[in-house]
Amino acid sequence: MSNTTHTPSQETTPASPYGTLPPASTPASRKPVSLPRLADMHARGEKISMLTAYDATFAAMADAAGVDCLLVGDSLGMVCQGLNSTVGVSLETMRYHTDSVSRGLRRVQGTAWLIADLPFGSYQESREQALRSATVLMQAGAHMVKLEGGGWTTETVRFLVERGIPVCAHLGLTPQTVHALGGYRLQGKGDAGALLKQHAHALQDAGATMLVLEMVPAALAADLTAELKHCATIGIGAGKATAGQVLVLHDMLGINLGKMPKFVRNFMADAPGVLPALKAYVQAVKDGSFPDDQLHAW
Image (cartoon, rainbow, N blue to C red):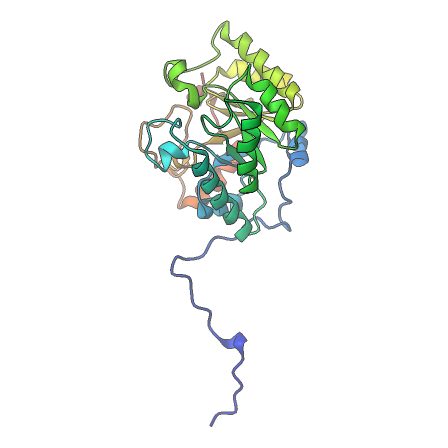
């Protein structure tokens, strides 16, 4: 009989049948992204990188690549559910995906800032409805909620911010109201730019600390970025002068189900894998090489 002592440490741990999640950007290499840190990045002129995420694994990979902000966008209706627009996405669906992304980040000690979309019909009725809906997403793990539109949304933003809920606004092409806008087309041209500017300043004054500008002229986005001192602009089809950039994850990986929008660059085209593609996106946003206004803007 052998005298060798068998200890638990010598046992081989069975591998997960689904593989393992990639290592994250741990607190030792990157401090957790917070609202004050985002404000500091904005003040220093460091570009903010943002991507959508809808599940635990891609959330962990994006965090490992150094993405600053993850957006659980209602674009999941089109990307994950196969809908024709974002209008059919429910609050419960947003809660489910926010929870999934949040758990992915927790599993790998992720440090990214997590934003979740308030879906169509979850905040239009009243400020109180917006608070109830935002509470659902915050309890699922979101650090901030995003809502679309200007004008009437200003007081909703103020109401949420006063109650401790950080808010990201969204102007320009607002997909939840695409039918009212007449389709997916450039917004803020000509005289319409003055109204968009008015709405942007009102949203900043109400407490919004981030503002997605989607499909607006690059010159308009540049003006707003310079004017809004306490609200970081995040562009998608709005030129390179914004304080940061966001893309739909599947778009920038070249695996969407429809026509590739003009403002998208396929980062998988020159990358050996998903993680290098995500890192290339972050680097291109940070160094200002993406977007290229000649290719990706109006």
